[in-house]
Amino acid sequence: GDRTIDAAGHRVVHGGERFTAPARVTNEVIRAIERLAPLAPLHNPAAAQGLRAMAERWPDMPQVVVFDTSFHQTMPREAWQYALPDEVYTEHGIRRYGFHGTSHDLVTGLAAEHLGIPRGEFRAVVLHLGNGASATAIRDGVSVDTSMGYTPLAGLVMGTRSGDLDPSVVTHLMRNHGYDAEELDTLMNRRSGLLGLAGEADMRQVLENAASGDGRARNALDVASYRLAKYVGGYHVAVGGAQAIVFTAGIGENSAPFRARVLDRLEALGVAYEAEANRARVAGPHTISAPESAIPVLVVPTDEEQAIARLTWELAR
Ligand code: AMP
Image 1 (tube, rainbow, N blue to C red):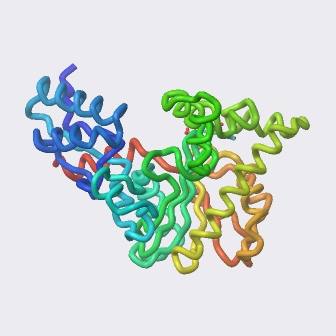
Image 2: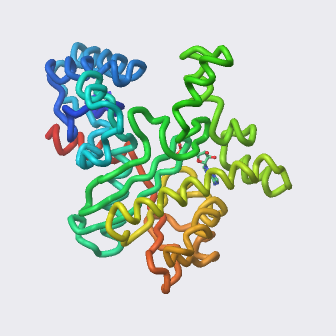
């Protein structure tokens, strides 16, 4: 056909500290993405290859890169620094970066709009619950803390990732049970989370098994919802009192039973929701909390592809 592509937008996992926003692609930008390879060895080199290949094939087509990390570059140092000797950060770049930024950013804007609060004044806890899951604390419309860390392994219980863990578990397993780095990586990233606890990574299946009396599935839901509720409580403090709790992504948007399990644990924050509103299937951003809830609870569909397309259009035109 005679249709041409106006621009290409790429999702890139790691922008390190260099990229605080999406960027127009230049050779220098591609080199910078490659230099960040130590932070994302599986993803950044592949992204750079893709960018180069497209630049060679379509030299005049604008390309834009959108980073999973950049939205979280507004975190204050107290939130991103690990309490390790400072040189571990200065020499090796070990710090909290955070991920899912494109989604957290989009959903924050949509939630503020839905509530009629100026984005720059918006305080919220945003819960992106998909196969990977992360919570973000939003203050003045920007990220001030997030549950993923140096890598996407930290924080919440996910489909196959453990989330938070005492790091000594790792050294113990290496010393006493013969695990090497590769095996530990697989254990924590691919065999843990819902899969490790319940034998199923898919939330639908876990809920179904729990409903038919499977004790492992029930336990997995307890561990996951308890962990999540603790993060909401912590981030409520971090943002100075949230004006909204926002659910998004596969589980956050679609799983009323899992949302209910989390919200039931937030009574101490004055959160109240309506079972019917929680169960109702509504397209677009909507409120599921009861009118008397101290904090409104919203479901806001995310759309990372559309967000990347919009950002690309803005930078490419
Ligand atoms: P995502 O990574 O955002 O595509 O989300 C994937 C996760 O969403 C999987 O754990 C799915 O089981 C879950 N999910 C999708 N639809 C539903 C649903 N209707 N009920 C419960 N979980 C769902």
